Amino acid sequence: MTHRQVLEALSGLLLGMFVSMLASTVVSTSLPVIIHDLGGTQASFTWVVTATLLTTAISTPIWGKLADLFNRKLLIQIAIVIFVLATAAAGFSQSPEMLIAFRAVQGIGAGGLAALSQVLMADIISPRERGRYMGLFGAVMAVATIGGPLLGGVITDTLGWRWNFYVALPFAVLALIILQRTLHVIPRARRKVSIDYVGIVLLSTAVALLLIWVTLVGDSFEWWSLQTVLMVGGAILGTVLFVVTELRAKEPLIPLSLFRNRTFTLAVIASIATGIAMFGASVFLSQFMQLARGATPTEAGLMTIPMIAGLLIASVGVGALITRLGTWKPFLILGAVFLTAGSFLLSTIHYDTNFLLVSLYMFLLGAGVGMTMQNLVLVVQNTSDPNEIGVASAGVTFFRSLGGTIGVSLMGAALASRVSELVTAGKDDITATVMSLGADAQKWADTLSSGTLPQVSAMPAALRVIFEDIYAQGISHSFLIAVPFAVISLIAIVFLPNTPLTRMTTTERIRASEADLATVSVSEGMDAVAATADDAKADAAPATPTRASRRAR
Image 1 (cartoon, helix red, strand yellow):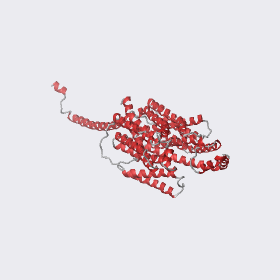
Image 2: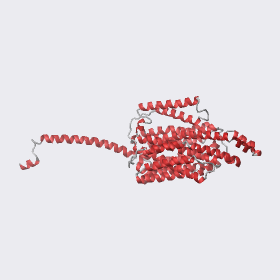
Image 3: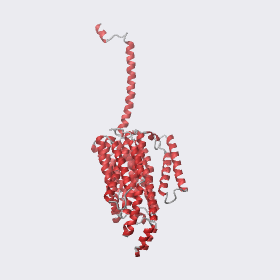
Image 4: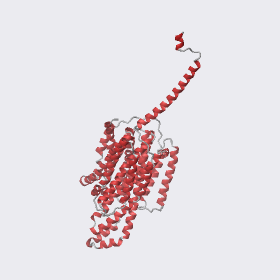
């Protein structure tokens, strides 16, 4: 494909990804308003977010397996339709339960978009050339991440929060039209397929139990409790049964043979840290800006631009360099170093830390994510069996989502625990400050005793400084959890085999392997024929006159 044809084909994929991210980020600033209007609780708020993450993580490997069995272009169009219809339906929600249900369906479509976009890129662009185009995905992520919350705030204030769910519809229709007209995928050979339904059920059960437990533990029930035993035990049992099933399945959902590939296994380990950094930063940096620096939601979105800038510059710049130089490992190692440094430095911030320093730390973290996230999928696709490119790509994305979700839950638990300790330790100072507020003393005493997240920006100056310091310490403490994972990621990347990037697309690799088999069989057959003919000539030589002897006669 020419450069123009590649860009035309990618336009539909990029627009599909933009729809997915925009529909997710546009509601982030209005979610508190939505839950309040629907009469929901803090638990409802948590489940609206968790439901999407849960179904996205579960459905990603399923979509990846389907991509190896069926028409990939049709699959991504189905994923867009599922995602957009669920998003639009969420705008008609009349209760928190209804919203949670539609968000769960939305996650199924999001899992398809995340998995299939990577697989289709491998179909039309070779690993060597893919770096220059990976930056476009980084740009889409940056625009959706920055623009989504700002657009959501404006829509909520002018048209109402329900329009946040409808704004993606025209983009989705346009994405479907562009995909239909520009994306041309070589039809796969028809063959009888066997879908691993038992594996799907077991994987879904194991992952759901684990993520639900991580989300609720420490809040709804204690770490050591009957619920923990049942959920963790059920997740372990489901995982064991899933492994046994995959070993016997004709078409396993996640072929365990993938883990024999050293590149795949190390990339999975490294991607977990990337997921924690990506999800953790998006959740807790926004909280830091609002709770430790007194910013509004819109201001918090603007203050995290340095991290998005780091992600955008690194993904675009490094992608272009990988294509130009054909070298990927030094950039991945540098990205892991930035990831580790950014996580560690963010664990040192305070409420009064110079914002230029905080911006530098965020930029480093964003650059680390930009250098590692897409390129880990790239190196896996470069070495995987072309007939398993779907499950291999989705496998890395699945473990990144799973690790990120679990990591964020652990960081949230650490934040809650640290804040509770600091509030208890500073109880006397807080009480004295509240009592000095005069007529407003009772109001703030009732607010603080309610257990809800305080609106720090609205607090009196004396009380505001105390809570900004408490939340800054709590959030910086939570970033410490990401540091050891980042170090493990760095070690895994160092040991990745430095395999050169191929210049063939997935389709070309499949054709080449078929041609190689044909060449080998034909060559062997010709050798056998040649050998037989030579033997025949040798046997007949004494009795058969040559052309020269006939001429002599």
